[in-house]
Amino acid sequence: MKSIFINAVSIREGGPRTVLVKLLTAMHQERPDLQMCLAAPPAICEELEDAVTACWPVDLGQSPFTVTKWYEIDLARTARRYDADVVFSLTNYLPNRRLTLPTLLLEQHAGHFSPTFDRLTREAASSTLGRAAWRYRCGWVRRSVEAATVLTVQTAVLADAIAALTRVPRDRIRVIPHGPGWVENRAEIARAGRSARPLRLGYITKLGVQKNFETLFRAVKRLSEWGTNIRLVLTLDPKDSLAIRVFGQAEATGITHLIENRREVESHAIAGLYDSLDIFVFPSLCESFGIPMVEAMARGLCVVIADTPENREVAGAAALAFPALDADELATMLRRLCDDEELRRKHACMGLQRAGDFSWAKAAKGTLAALEAAAARNVS
Image (cartoon, one colour):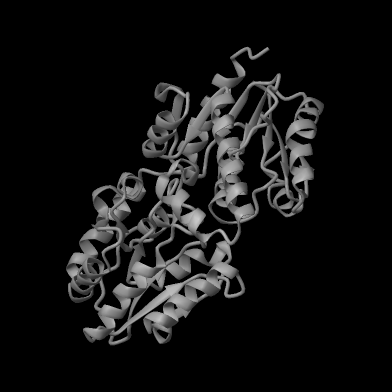
């Protein structure tokens, strides 16, 4: 394998952007001889110019026509232009029309295979058209995973779900966990008594219907009623329509005065934000990997997670788990942690050790092996 064509035309922010930037950078370090040609939005192309050989800036806009034209016509044409041995798509999608080149598909959206996410998305849709668009995207994703020469995912939980809902055999799905987001692992856990300042809980995440802010807000309300001096740190864009609904939930719960919203944080400032926290809470109901969990563990935080299979797979025994919709249990767990610094330290140490299992170098090696396997297969 000498050349790969990377399809990332719809990746702009959040976890997919983190994966794209960190993974391609690590792949370039592992295989500097490999010709990597990237199709992505102009800002992403600029960010990755040192890691890729060539970049094809693509702005799909909001038109379904431009999306269809890219996948059904331009993608194959552009890949051939760069004489690629394999197409690597990180967007969850492949063309409906079968490509003559081998393909590696990284499926990053567990929601397409989750009954919980499907229900939440349909409930949140503002129109029949919105629900129909979601159904269409789910169908397209399922056709894509079945068409891929090689398929990779970040958790065994997602691999099992895909195998159960599609015609892809489980033994054909490669599980390649990714690295610790934008942070580096701390060298050690600091031992220091807390001052009288409020105890800082953090939920560092992008918005999504699965993020379960309601349970977290009710737990924070209960902690406040118990007299716990607490602040909840969030990273939400207040102009986002979903964020407006989330802040409406906070106001209805009566905890607006307890929230410190840092808005969207630049990647270079993420580690410092984690370091300002005492406990990290991750109540999400559905995740493909949950990079913030790994980031928090890597920065030496005690982590509390919703008890879902994918959260448990990633965090392991390092995290404390609460029943996903049980605000009272979450509040009780948090109060115990607030009062017990040694317990927080114990789980912080376990988390730091667990975070060491994840690295972008390992992810790059696994992905390169998957690309070699795809390139070796004849799809003509």
